[in-house]
Image 1 (tube, rainbow, N blue to C red):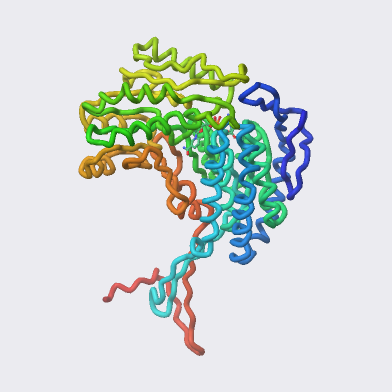
Image 2 (image 1 turned 90 degrees about the horizontal axis):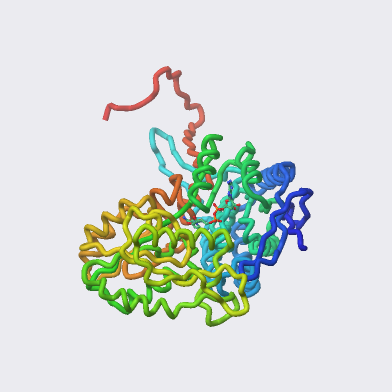
Length: 499
Ligand code: NAD
């Protein structure tokens, strides 16, 4: 069985560990690759080398750093089919969905090509007599990223291109469920001309993440994953007095007003709730049918009955298997809890089968109505193709439901009323809002701005906020004297209040 390599000093090398994680195929349960749980020495060595690379990279002209990203984005585009195939085979998502994952990633690399503008500081001339003040953005040093299974290309690309173009070096620890996509992205980064040791890829689980968290030379951590792990990583990183940002779970609500365009509502809900088998942090898991909009529910169910899971290379498949058997069991357990707690199961995806893949982690489209906010299916992130429907009387009730949910990643409203949309946009306590579109993931010149229980930290992913996250601001105040000019000794803290 193939043992996965690490990527250290631009070379693919075997770990010396005795411990491996067997990564299995979500369609068959066959072991696809053995992922090394790297040793502490290997991780420490990767960090030390990255630190040395940073020392010369930070002094590399910004246009040279930018051109690396220009070449990199071109290479990702040229190789998109090959990357998408690797991604689909290890993750299970359909080929077209895998391409979308990659496109949303290379858009961040394209954004990284605006580094010279993004890195600009501020200047004020003549802040006091003969004094000027200006600021620079300077890189931190070595930064690290820990990524999840659901977007194997997009999420690593949220992180290292922006950190590196800003002048940092980066250690990436991909999800052990989908490490091959990251290795391909790393290979292309080398091909694009990345200097040695600037990006290092190590593998593992908790122990390896702990080694990253406790190393004094890693100064900032970007994490995307589940809430409990995010809380742990954010707490441990900040307890070590480091910078951290953690993007975690979600429960995204879509509000359907009775004045909305019915066809658009139903199509949007089908795709946004079932796409990627519901394994999207911005997917819709709760629909709020306001007032008479509830009359559309039977038509929604009819459409969802047509939705079929299948293998990544089956052109008729709408989505793939869920990532692991454990995830399938958890989803099925939550569906049972919904039944036990009294919700009405209109569509039951348990026991779904796909011809030729009897061992796949299949869950069919599942829909509950009569869902109560105290039920586990409402409170917990299911991360599967399961939609819960609630029926608030009006927009105020819908807003109350959303604003009392612990998560605040994404939400949307479908309506023909500008007044309803405006009220929703202003009052909803969620960081990313869609109006007549279901999954409002911002393009990279904005930032990915989850709120409340969906995010720990203050600076978000990509956009200008990411450049702020990956840099320090240095502010310089200068004063130049003419020849022979001098000032007396000042014992007081000088401030001129006379005018
Ligand atoms: P996960 O938390 O299980 O794993 C994420 C990463 O953390 C992996 O690299 C994993 O190896 C590592 N990890 C796991 N357990 C750890 C531990 N105890 N200590 C340290 N590191 C550990 O998440 P997942 O199942 O891969 O991803 C799904 C989750 O990610 C969902 O909750 C989803 O909502 C969330 N997600 C959030 C966003 C967002 O932007 N908010 C985006 C994508 C995914």
